[in-house]
Image 1 (spheres, rainbow, N blue to C red):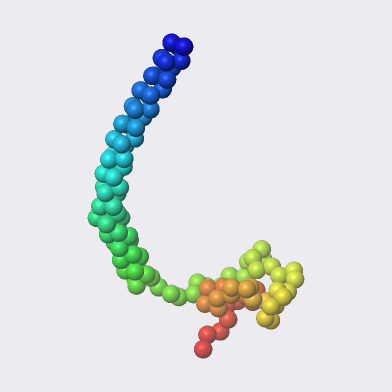
Image 2: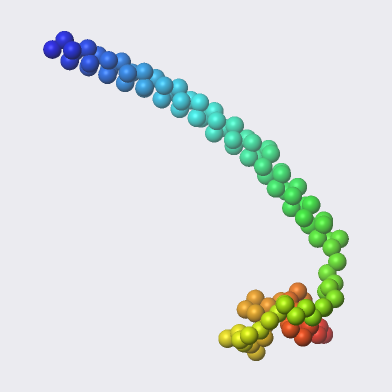
Length: 108
């Protein structure tokens, strides 16, 4: 019976210690959440804004001319027609960027 009493006393003391640790951890968690919230607004969002501005400015300087069409034999091979449209254009065809087997489409 004495062993049972000692075991229950050890379990109670370990539960008390666990509760103390959890309450200390909760306070630390609140501080960590506050720190990450501040970092999000002070570092992350301005960083994203700077990256967006950089991308916009570089895109303004970029030329939008079509490269010269070179009919390589290993590119744009059509063994079977596409099941949509006229059969020579892919599903997400962009006439400015994607060439057909005979070359770029004429722009008006």
